[in-house]
Image (cartoon, rainbow, N blue to C red; front, side, top):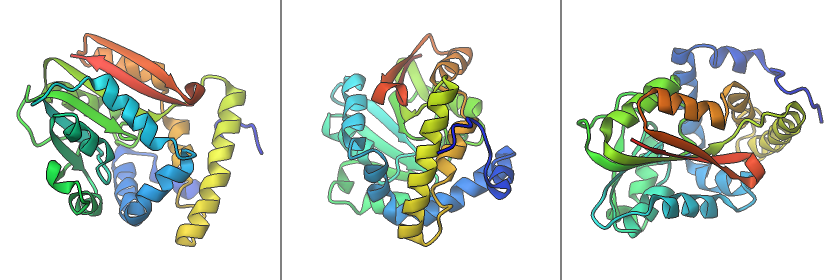
Length: 245
């Protein structure tokens, strides 16, 4: 496996992620394509640890009964349902209609409300939520700072923001091996599940362009949050951000 840390393998993918508008179109198409396999792929790419990581995020939220919670990029609803089970009045929002449809039709679907919407233009009034969460969401938005600003806007003063996502390791060697692994595994899964080996190569390419956990905390603070910490997951290959408005 190559240890070159930031090599771009496919000009087509590079071009698709080169501007916020083109990234937005690409992400919408991609998640529409993979929606029906999303639950499976999160398990496979995490060695079955995805649910445990999400449970840790919800535990860190320390949900109070009746709290208003918004789960962004909710996918098929894993975190949304856990928030609801913890006593929150939870809303899940995702930009992919099929994801929202799948979440709403799960057995636990009636325990929460689901909407199609954009993280960069949230359809809610300011200071509405006690808690905002996202799993694998902020790395995928076309303009990260705009999404963080929207999250800050809809949180109440003192509200909590929690985000689980891949990290971009600071070590060039670790990063190179990590991205090479994700490329090989993603290509294999893409071929097996979609007959297209490039389907999941977006993940390592998006990590190459991601600022990393520490830099994300800096952006979060610059957008008005009083505090932010990045908690390492899987030895720092993943991270949970916890920020307080």
